[in-house]
Amino acid sequence: MNTPDNIRSRKTVQRMEKVYLELLAADPERQVSVMQLCSYAGVNRSTFYSHYSDVFDLQRKIERRISTEVSAIFTDKGYGENRMTRERFSVLLEYIRRNRLFYHAWYVTGRMDDPSAIAVVMNRPNMTEDDRFSILFYKAGISAIIRDWVIRGCVESNEKVLSVLTDICNL
Image (cartoon, rainbow, N blue to C red; front, side, top):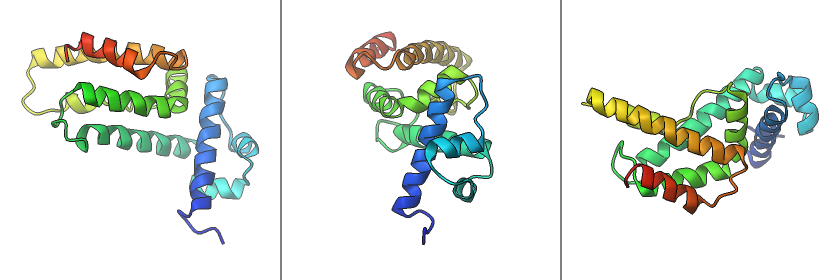
């Protein structure tokens, strides 16, 4: 019997997520159907529906997982709450590289919610308007660099991208 959250169930969920992201990246204009996803993932529709109510539920769960994991980079690493550091950029870049299928699909489709780590910094208390404008400026530039890096397949090393980002942010 396949019990919830056992190894087999987790691997099935991972496979469905991976196939969904691959299908999105391959044709960003197309809506992915449950039938198509199940066919490519090699699972039955009943298996899909035992995990998700529909394709949008799958997408929301992926986004939620990614956002939670990215937020953890800013809260669990001991680098100081709501502060961007070289170490955080390094951890974030490695995370993005490991999850580049998600980020590629996210960037090319424009359909998914922003799991931006910078949003965490935007919520700090007592932020002045000048701070807010500066953060928005840096966020746009950092996002553009990371987007370009991901779309081109993360060909540059993490260290090269880290060097550019830390120079821009004076870290």
